[in-house]
Length: 308
Ligand SMILES: [Cu+2]
Image 1 (cartoon, protein in one colour):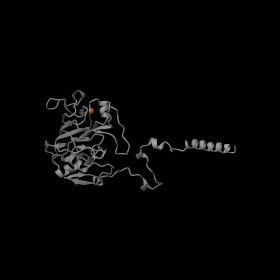
Image 2 (cartoon, rainbow, N blue to C red; image 1 turned 45 degrees about the vertical axis):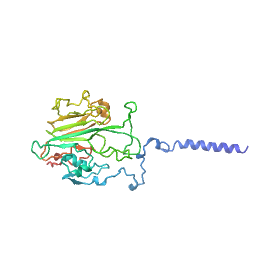
Image 3 (cartoon, rainbow, N blue to C red; image 1 turned 90 degrees about the vertical axis):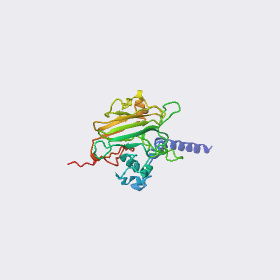
Image 4 (cartoon, protein in one colour; image 1 turned 30 degrees about the horizontal axis):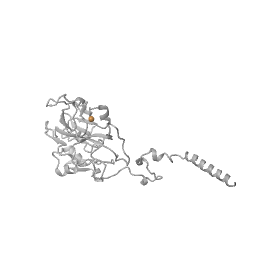
């Protein structure tokens, strides 16, 4: 009989403990609410204990350097672009050295530079090739899965992006699920000069039809073959097919290119990028593709100009 009050007391302590645990802030929600990468451990005023947000896989890519005569500025950002891609995007995959091309991720016909039509020291005929890539599964930002979308029975892509035509495989190696740094969202910024004759070829490497619509960019309705030049849905480029759009923009500006097939969905899946037309300047070798879509590591003449 003397055991009963002791049992009641123990049960009371357990119940009170369980109630009190509900008020301990963050104790039980943390694991569910936050993906691992955002659960930083913070030292008291000691920044050396901060978890580094950088992989810093390629410290040599971040340095300022000159490749095949192309000056490339330093990249302070975490995930720098491969400087060999930048050099090839500036000089063209057809004129860069083979050693540089081999260290880039670009196919030999990804950025083909042609004649200097106005004799001002830079090429004015530019042939670009874009593919469509799909991202699934892991994000490089953490070891959690990225959101996927049910677009059809059994099809759950995460993201799509246009990518300069590349060489080799899309993943880092056969055991990796990580895309090579060259394949990124958003789609690359494309940069040309006012008056350039630009040929943009979409090689549809994807399983759905897509187009490239050059939104706000000065272009004709038909290309020189009399085919569609506007990239609207009724002129979709089907899987395995390719199509070339021709543009000779008369005005400079910052515009957009995007897929125009099921526009609302395909654009939001990532099939859009900036299309920058710069004012024509002598010896202006622009960085045609900006894969990271951030820092331009080979700034154009107009950007470097000093104004009084
Ligand atoms: Cu599309």
